[in-house]
Length: 401
Image (cartoon, rainbow, N blue to C red):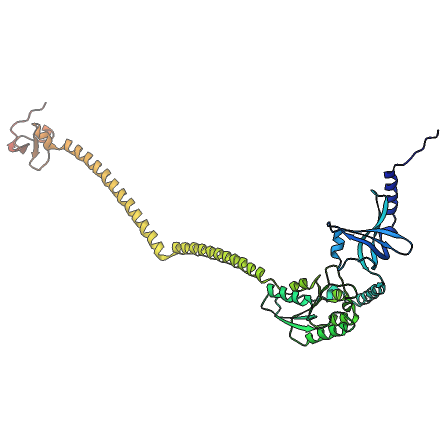
């Protein structure tokens, strides 16, 4: 019996899925058909079938895609769906994973859109270099939109909540239908004759046909030649029009366009508070540094002032005086000690002190002291001094030792 190398169902399904996913055509598919069995579950994901006269294909549309659509497909509706084909392995079926949906029969509108886009892009109307900055502090804002649409209410609400002091001027127009392009151009040109700082061109979301007025060449050129900066806020975030590409700033919604043209007063207030605190810090710091510098200069000036120099000199004189007095006192004390010593020596040599001890002093008639018997002669007149007086004598005899 020959052994058969059989595949598992999972292996075969995975192999087929790999073949489909590797096919470049099946990764980027536009599919036209009639919607049937449309169901949206609580998760937000949508499941439906696309069919024609001969075949049916299962389709899946995730919640993120469904939420971005202006309206969901309806059973019986003829649509164009874009996505990629893959295999749902649990059931072994292939299906289209849809990432965009539009009504069928409007392919010519997209062709017109792309043709005009290429034309104006070639002329440089989309170049960033020609885009003008928006004013930081608009005084007056022009609005081109329907006076009856929700877009106008959203714009007014956002601007009044963010920057209530600005003036708003509505230049009303239709935003849908055959007359809309001509009226939009007229509304734009009317605002260029008024003293406005910026112009908002806006309308709410809708299908491609609903937004088609903003894909009109006349509207695009009117925006391009406007001497006033133009902000385009047309449709939802996923919608793009020719007006968006030509405008100086494209906003995803009318509300976002309103927020783009005015600052937020509350944020400005908070910024002012922060700047004020920073300014006070800088001012206090500067004053403190200047005070410290002035104090230092005042100290330096004081040290160099005549009064300070005189005070220093006076103190120096006092110091020298005290030093001199101390020196003189030391010299006097030393001299007194020396005098006392000399006095003691003199006292020790004083003849009178000798006389007090019983000795006598002989003075000759000429006042000289006789220190030897040889100094006097017999018969010479002398005075003999004793401690309590003197004796007048004459030499009557001389005896030598």
